[in-house]
Structure formats: structure tokens, C-alpha cells
Amino acid sequence: MLCVNGKVLKRVRSSALALLVGLGAGCIALPAQTTTPHATFDGAKALAYTHSFVTETGPRFNGSPGLAKAQSFLKSYFAKDQLQDDTFTSTTPAGPQLMHNFIVRFPGKRDGVIVLATHYETNYWLRDIPFVGANDGGATTGLLMQIASDLRAHPPQGMSVWLVFFDGEESVGSQWTDADSLYGSRHLAAKWQADGTLSKVKAFLLTDMIGDKSLDIQRDTNSTPWLVDTVQKAAGQTGNGAYFFKETNTVSDDHMPFVKRGVPCVDIIDIDYGPNDSYHHTAQDTLDKLSAHSLTISGTVIEQTIRLLDNGASSGSPAGTR
Image (tube, rainbow, N blue to C red; front, side, top):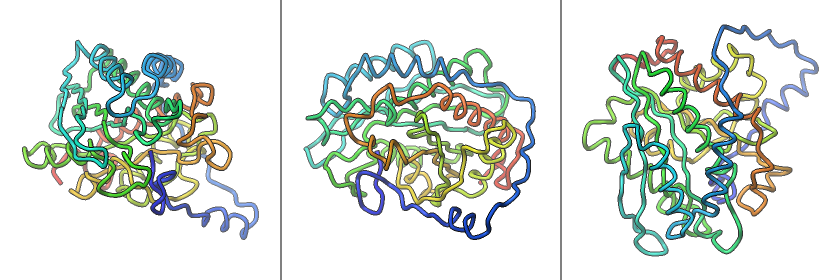
């Protein structure tokens, strides 16, 4: 799921600056968070969707029966929604591979689109171990499924909300490179740029590895500052500020093809998974490592972020044109 300083195990560069500053300054009084009324996201249901998805599909690397099951699972769940199967072929180190992105559209009443995204597949190069990606691809799939349930019950009154499930985020080979990674997002960003769709996207929120019981979402320096600040504001308003942006990293993820095209993006990601990141890209990335509480926090903040974007609560003025 990640490339960090050229390593496939992580797509980030960590900074301990905040920790060092805190240690040097001693005890610092932090301002109290201000909470505002908001709906609490049902993380238990998101976790139940995650359990169903992961147990029914298992490993989901390209060409596997599990990936075909995952695609059928998503098609079935979103059958009554505005679902698009975006099919394409990518040239990979393992040869040409057929891939499927899924886009689910919930129309709003105002111009503009907010995209919520995840990837859903697992690593081809880990195909010889029982790697099911419970947190890495599974938890955020369950999260977006529950957000879809909320959108069905309460259709968008502002901008449209589109859910995107990317195929081919992971590298096919064991070494993460720009050419061997992010196949689905690179394809879709180029396609949307060519057909004019990209100009409609006012905010792109990527979710990744946020079902971990020990939730600690880092600030990504590749993300758009005003959109990161909007997420931070949403976290504070919902009483979840302690779980967000205490550390800073530089992440290469599915938002990057959109960042490079000028789309406001934020990667909502917890890249430290297990003691010393020991669960990441291993057979230990299993359902017992996940938490409904973490999914509640993540979903609540994301849905509050949508409300803030609809209210124009950012320096980026997402309701207007870029």
C-alpha cells in the first residue's frame, strides 16, 4: 500500500519534529477543542461491511479469484446506485493486466463534486502468503460502504459526492516505483482530465489504513494545505482532534495523480500499523487488528468535512471554480 523513501513498506517520510518540539518545551497547554453538533458515524456497521468484504474475498491480487469476488461484491452492493465500472488494461512488470475502478455517484443540488476514495485490491507480489489486507484496502472499503448507506438515507444537499474504489494502487513488483504503482488513479485522473470531469472536482479525500485500533492519522505534506486544515477543523469540531495530524509525513498514494493536475487533495492515512509498523504488508494484517471505534472517528470526521466543504469553510472556496 505504501512507498516511503523508495521502500514499498511505506510511502512516507516521517518527521519527529512535533515530538522533539514538545520534549524541548516541556508541558504545553493546548487549546480546548470546540465541538459543534454533528451526526456520529456508525463505525460498527462499517466494520461489519469490512468483515464481509474481507472474509468473502480473501487475497485480492490481480488475476486472482479473490479480486474477481471483490469486484462482484462491490457491483452487488452498489447495484441500485449510479455505479460505473471503469475498465482498463495496464502494462505491468507481470504483463498486461485488466483492472477495474468503480465510481459511485450520489448527485447533489449544487455544482461541484467531492470525491471520497480508497483502493480495494491487495499486492500481487504478496500472492504467496495469506495477505488479506484487512486494514490495507479492506477497512476503507467498508468505511465507504457505510458512507454510501448514509448518503442513500440523506442524499447530498450541496455538492455531489462520488465514491471511488481504485484497482491497481499497489505495485505489482516488490519495489514501488512511479511506473509500477497507482495504476487505477493514474488512469482515472488522466481520463477525467481529458473529458473535462476533473474541473468539477472541488475536493478529493483519499482514505487509507484508518481502521487500526491504535489510530494516529498523520499530516501529509503532499496534500493541499487548506484541505488538510479543513479536515483538522472537522476533527476538532467533532471532538476527535487528538487522532489527527500530530506527526507529519510525505506520502505517495492514490491522491498524487490528482494533486499533479491541480485538484485539492488530502490523504487521510495512518501509516504506522502495528508495533514498528510490523503488520503492514504481512499476513498479520487481519480483521482482529481493526476497531469500530477507529472507523467511527474516521467516518465522523470525513462526513463533517463534507459539511464544511458544502458551507465553503476553506480558503480554497471549493464551491467555486479553481
